[in-house]
Image 1 (spheres, rainbow, N blue to C red):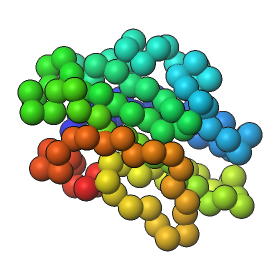
Image 2 (cartoon, rainbow, N blue to C red):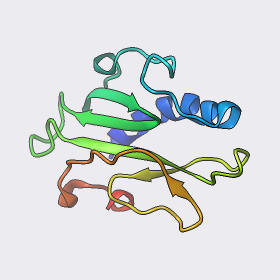
Image 3 (cartoon, one colour):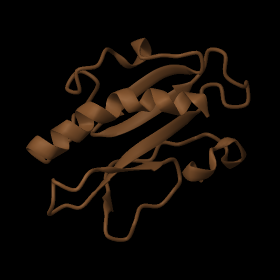
Image 4 (cartoon, rainbow, N blue to C red):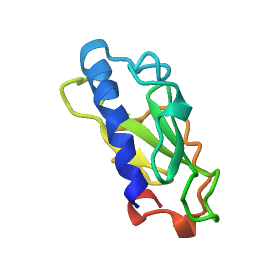
Length: 119
């Protein structure tokens, strides 16, 4: 899914915040990004950061069956080691047992339309 790459722009400041502060940006402003409705692409109408979670709302030229639906990317971390990079949990996927997933999964994209790594 081409839209997923848009989430990469938000991952960098979230990773930096975890590594230096052991916390996550509360919102787009704390992450140094514009308001959610200004982070868009052909298939994404908004990208919101909420306590380190990236929530993408599909829209614009997207398949009508997922228009207005949300896909979440949640950070998974090893609490006692900020040096270990964040692993990103897409949609309804599970994290490794050794990692703690942070934030709320707001994914509303039907399973049939989720990329395999997000199911």
